[in-house]
Image 1 (cartoon, rainbow, N blue to C red):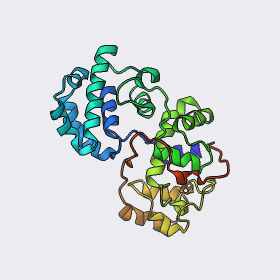
Image 2: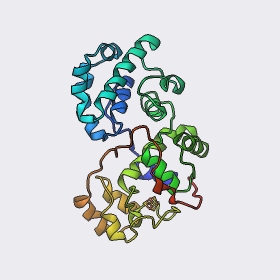
Image 3: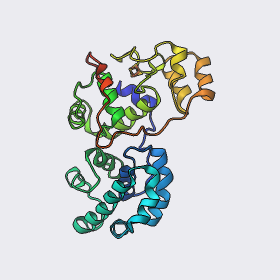
Length: 268
Ligand code: SF4
């Protein structure tokens, strides 16, 4: 399954826009209970106004709140950004540290955010257990655990460390495009043959093909073995991918229905 995911999503990547570790940290803080698309609309103005830790530390609270207001929970997020800037100045010379233990001590940065930063800004392998990742690895029977940290460790045992970051991207890409929370497109899924949860969603191929999202839909349908007519029609009809489903604040775990996969899958 891991190899099939690698073939299906060779360009999987973090869908937040950033150019520096600090920008990624700020964008990830804003992404709590907000879509990546909305965050990417806000961050150009944010990054221009607050280019470094000192700018966040000395921010006028009201001005910062107004910029990030569209991302929701803007008062808490403003506190996190100002606190992050101050902590970076005080303890790290204004730079973001590159270790998990130091990152998780910073305001606004939990373990999931820290792994996003490590994997995407510092090239340090990290597994990001968001709602998609937790749901899918449970459906696949890779783990029965529900706690995000335990899921992270369990999957880390199954997959070589060098692949952790890309695995996270690929699983999240598949969750956003094919293996949806409520209506997974099982009948149009390239993993159907190996997936112990096949049948959780729609199995009739034509109906399932309409659930596959994104510009990659025709290629994904071909990889799933669907006929060319269905694949071609998806080029015109596939819905765009919403880059991130908002998650409940403080929750990075899978939704309850993810515990459906009962038999053990093989990630290889
Ligand atoms: S077969 Fe269904 S449950 Fe399994 S990965 Fe594909 S869409 Fe998800």
